[in-house]
Every structure is written in C-alpha cells, then in structure tokens.
Length: 157
Length: 193
Image (tube, each protein chain N blue to C red):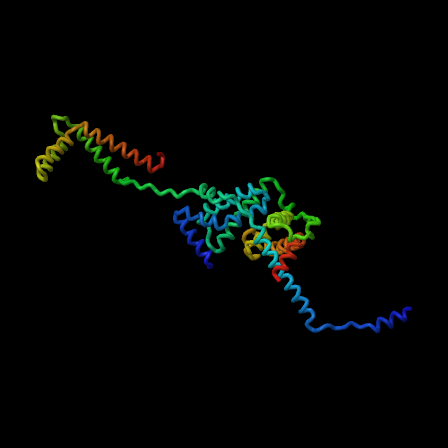
C-alpha cells in the first residue's frame, strides 16, 4: 500500500500558472477593495450625515458675544479737565467778589474786553464773571458733566 | 489654498476685525458635520446639539489663536472631539474600557434581507444602527474618514491619536461596518458597476 502511495505521489506534479498570476489576483483584490471603498463613501454621504435643529445657527450667534463699539465721548478727558479747571477758577474768583464789588479777575477781564470788543459784549461778559450764582451753576454743571463722562467711560451706566 | 479655504479665511479675518456676524458663515458651513461628529461620540441628539454649539462658541472665543496651519474645519472638529470626550468623562463613562470592548456585531437576519426594498429612512436607520454598534471613537474616526474625507494625518491632528492607532481603529471599524452593511454594500457596489 505504501508503495502505491509513493507511486501516486511521484506521479503528481504541480502545474504552474501564468507568470502574472499573482499580479492578476492582487489586481482583482485591489479593484474589489476600491469598489467597496466607493460604496462605503456613497453610503456615508447618503445616510450618515445628521442635521441639527433649524435654530442651531441662531442659538450660536446669540451666544457669541457681540462686538461692542467703543464709546468715544464728544469732549475728550483732557478737555474736561481743562473745563473743570476753568470753572474752578471762575468759581473761586466769583466767590471772592460781590455783586457790587467786582473781583480782581473781573477788573482784569474788563480791561481786556475793553481793548478788544464792543461795549455790548463788554457789558455782557462783565455780568457773567461778576455773578456768583452763575459761576456756581457753571461749576456744578461742569462737575455733573465730568461725572457723567467718568461713569460712561467705566460703563457704569 | 482651495476656494473654500480662502473664503473661510476671509470670514475669519472679518470676525477678528470685530464683525462677529461673519461667524455665521462658518457656523452654517460646518454645523452639520460638527453635530454629526458629536452625535457619534455622545449618541444623544440633545447632548450633541449642545456640545457642538458650545464647540462653535469656543472656536469663536479662541479664533485669534487659530494660526491657519491646518484647515479651519480640522481645528473646529478637534474642539468638538475634546469637548465630547470631556463630556463623556464627566458622565463618568469609562471611555478607555468602552473603546476596547469588542462589540459583537449582531448577526441578525436583517443583514441578508433584500435591503433594496427598504425605503430611504429605513436604510438611514440601518446605517446609523451599524455605526452605533461601533465603539464611539471608532464611529467618530470612520465618520471623519468617509464623510468628511479626512486623511489619516488630519484625523491624527483632530484626535491627537497616533498614526498607527488611527490606522488600526479605522481598519477595525471598516471591517465591522463591511460585515454589518453587507447587504447595502452589495447593492451599492452593483450600482457602481
């Protein structure tokens, strides 16, 4: 029996396929894989994408902090300091003089005006700088405006 | 730079110049993909919506740090990924364990059923089901790969996973999907021929 097996074994020999056999097989495998990839991509494109709610963009945009345009006051800080100083000076000068007793400032101012302007202007300005009440009103309104500026610049109002 | 990339750079510059409304273009352009990716990880529509919205807001707040070395979408999706992962961690979900669980693909008879009779919605559900059976991270990666057509390098950048890890996970996920979508794939392949 063993002899018979040997004879059969020896009689059998492997047949060789074409030289490009492996390449052909690999080519087919690659083509199949490519096709599978294409099919998978197509399935994903058709079915895998999910859609959020219709209000998605609105919700995000409402949460996104809006750009705050910086507040630029009409009168700068420096100008306000200048106005405040002038108002203080006017107040002090006005407080040191009476309605019937013009202050030193009033006198100097009167001289200056007389040189450079008409009698009507002279009279008008003289009344202004000679009045305590007006000076106080100017000072208080300047103070209020300066306070308003500071509060706005610090975004407290 | 592609046409889309230069367009989005235009809107990014506008946002950085103070025109916050320009961000709406970027939200509209990427909301679907961002939502889809978040959903693949958290598997709940409400959470995914909240997380993807939050990711957009984070992107807006950190837009000045976006250098433009990568695509805006790549950068955005990395935020979606990190956001979703930290959400899951907060929910005390042991992610590492989940990721290594070998999910058994349900060998239900539906796979070999004549799928061509299913309507669009049913087919969609079928694909979603197959994706849901994947571990969360694998589903996220495979969605980026097929739907967003991201390269392995881009996926690496988005997730921070190593190149070999991304490749392994993609391979594993692809095999599982091929198995569970056998019927649909066969039909799709027929239509490609």
